[in-house]
Every structure is written in C-alpha cells, then in structure tokens.
Length: 139
Image 1 (tube, helix red, strand yellow):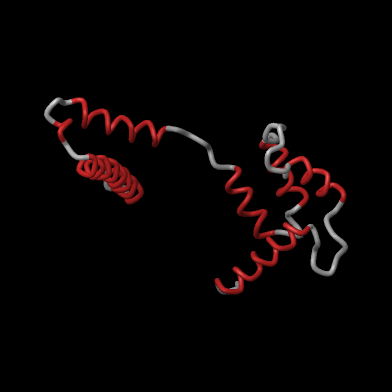
Image 2 (tube, one colour):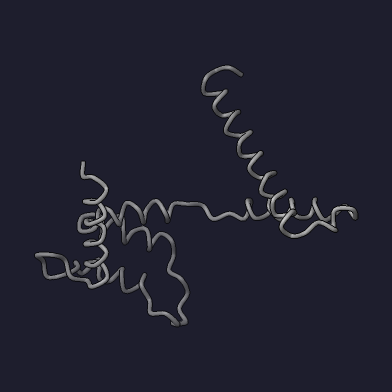
C-alpha cells in the first residue's frame, strides 16, 4: 500500500489526465467515456439542467474506473451520499427554542451560537455513547 504522499501524487496525476482528456501513454479517453463526459461536464452558464445522478455515476463506475481508480472511488462515494436537510432543520429548531422565550431573546448572537453548538454536540455524543454501549452489549 502506498504511503499518503504517493497516493496524493497518483490522485494529482489522475486529476490532470481527467481535466485534459489525455491519458499517460495512451491517446485519450474511450469514445464511450468521451460521450458520457460531454453530457456530464457541461460548460458553466449553459441552460441545460444537471444530468441525472445515474448518468454521472455511470461515468465513474463504467468508464473512468480503469483509467482513474482513485478519483472514481471518491466520486462514487460522494455521489452515493444522501442529500438531506435534517441537520439544518435541527439547527433552526435549536435557534427557535432559544429565541422563543422572551427572556432569552436578549442573548447575544455569540452566546446563542454557543448554546446551539453545545446542544447539537451533546446529542451527537449521546448517540455515540448509546451506539458504543449497544456494540459492547452493556445495554
């Protein structure tokens, strides 16, 4: 397994080749990869909508997996993440609870930020503690 410095060099080379369309020691991208890439990488300011997730994922799972293994692995992980507003909703709810009370609306923004931060992190810490207890079988 390469150490981190070597891996960064590999990723930088892959990025350069992906950006230029020229593979080291080869003529360039395959025709299939070229066609899908043209659909996925539209010029900024174009009026066309963002291509479907399945098309963007297929670029990395079918066409770019061999020439760009590191970038493909990262792209597939990123494209597999679920977009959600749950964390933002919890954050806004925390702000609402703080400023709902007439006495608390005199808090400075800095103090309110600290309270929201503490509340969110206490909830995360409690979830981690509970997960650890379940994994150890102590619950």
